[in-house]
Image 1 (cartoon, helix red, strand yellow):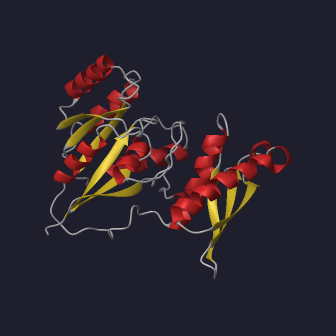
Image 2 (cartoon, rainbow, N blue to C red):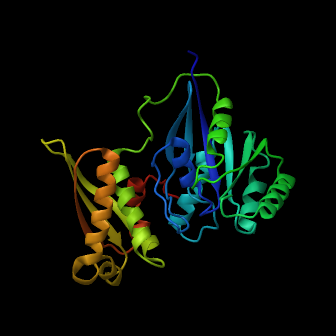
Length: 297
């Protein structure tokens, strides 16, 4: 059997559904998802298999106008994820308008040598007219090799897209074992799952002002895992919100994260959360290293 293996860089504006699409193509959850924009911070690789082909999907942070160092590092990770890809997939929210940030991404892809595919996502909730107008406008900026209409949420069009990606991959040995679905370590996955709960359970800007560090990840003799994590925030008021009245909010965050980790790791998980006030955590080089981002000046 001749194997093929290659890289697809999934890029786009925040909240286009890139992580949901990567999860759908892989066939299980590898990237965290929330309705809030800019949930993905570092690039992550999902591993999809189609026949004798392994498709390595780089899920990148949304490309937006950066305002602070963390934003600049996330945008740099997004463009870095596209380097050397066999296909660049631009994912666009098909139900919304076509903001300047989306056309600007298409403009910046124009001179890149890689084959580029346009993926109009959320067809389950978008109007056909809007989808066709978006496709026409974006193809006028940059003639895409292929244009796809999919719903990452319902799976509509995803099998066809996966087959097309597989067909575009070069011949070569697989990079990962057949049962591996991501390049993330379990330690990193644990931090991401807890961070997802911060996005899902907290409102407004608080999830953006926090991060999660896995301090301890120990295998117990009985096969279960003991995980200690620190949620870093910038101010004492933010710590109080995460703890909630009588510690109820932090308990709920921990319970949901623990249940999901138990399912993903297929073994019992003991999760201990601690909230620490660390002003300027987003200006600390070590934090960037833990998140998986490069420090940018």
